[in-house]
Image (tube, rainbow, N blue to C red; front, side, top):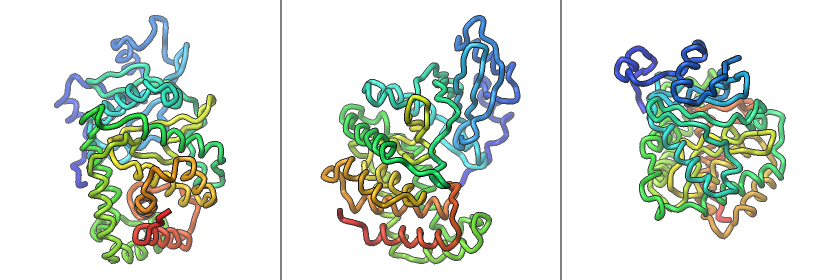
Amino acid sequence: MPGTSLSNRRAFLAAHPDVHLIDVENPSSLQTYLSQLGWLNPSETFISTDRVADSNMNCTLRVTTNQRTFILKQSRPWVEKYPHIAAPWDRNLIETRFYEVTSTDAILGDQMPRILGSDTVSRTLMLEDLGEAGDFSGIYGNDTLKQSEAITLVNYLSRLHSQFNASTFGTEFTNREMRTLNHFHIFKFPLDTNNDLNLDQFTPGLTVQANKLQQDYAYVDTVAALGNLYLQDGESLLHGDYFPGSWFKASCGIRIIDPEFCFFGCREFDLGVMLAHLVLAEQPETLANKLVDTYGRATINHSLVSQFAGVEIMRRLIGVAQLPLKCDLRKKIEMLDISRQLVLSPQDE
């Protein structure tokens, strides 16, 4: 999605004088802002503020005070890691509502961070600090996803999909702007022959392989049809970005974060994305089969799960949202072949 650069903070603040942009480099201003919101205790003072390194979409800080630690997460009308890319400013409000609604289910609520405060004017969330262990991105390297961990993750997904339906919430989670942004970067941009993305900077020779796939018109057309399905409203509440970066290793167990892409849609999308990352992380195929069994084979369209998995593999290899994969060109070609097979010849069961 073409976007005008929104990195000029001065112009943004001139248009929105009531908005406070949180800044790790200005802790005194941040402390004043939080005090005005009533989010700090009277005797609470800052010790340190640090940027959470793995955050891409939003400005996310860890604040340490003389009494506790907590997380601040602010959405802005641009992507924090790529400020030239426009992004829906209200995504923070959608995420807040997701946490509020899903926490009414005790089991799901226990698997997500608690909301400690929400400033709807500046689009800032104050969240429980789950610790510094980080997410599951290590599985792209040398880590292995344990079967017990994978089952916990897929059980969360199954419960989320089954406990909340569109007939109850109407258009509350349509999340059209975020879906449009995601649709562009998943289904369109990677296969655009004119996207000007230099893939050779990630893996020399990858641009040639991307061009081959971009000129495979049966593949491109099928991906486009899947993209249209993604944009359709459905009955199940989806997380919308269910990959290792959204699975957190808290000291109290696995927690699910970053549901800002949530919407009511096709449940096969979430499951397909999850399974795609097991392929990208070179996890055992038996683990993927176990997860499908645990989720419930009878409740899903297996072909659709396979196709969405294929698309996710493709976009993570030749799209903007690159992963810390430990594989060479040969392995990436193999994965692109898997993507093509899953999209064009999906598994029925």
